[in-house]
Image (tube, rainbow, N blue to C red; front, side, top):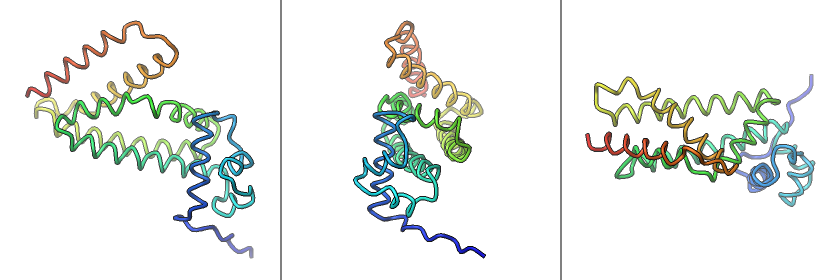
Length: 189
């Protein structure tokens, strides 16, 4: 009977360097630049060491997704604590700094089931937190619409970021004005 291979510690500095390196490559080069060799080179460590900390590249990519989700949850908590939480959540959604990385991870998810499962699980959990928070901030008669509002806002924010990156901005000002008016109306209640 084969024994399970020993893995490096979760909190290891080298493990964190591999995750940093993978995130950097995804952000700067994209999904096609991600390989064990390139991650190790970016981290300044040996390729064999990567497999001491991660059984597979999927495990490394799942760790990147987990880190991103941890950051997202921290930012979400900060948004909820802001004086105008709905507006802070909206600004968080339309922050372009995470758009490239999200797009690359989505592209990888099409080819790697384990990564897709991690992304979906994290997204479902996050969306549930968002809907719960929005429901608590809405008037009681509108609380049942929170999930739909979150979905619409997230979709619009993603589209605005994506199209702006391409240089396509027609209709953006009008859409943003509509969101601002809605936020003003909700915050006034």
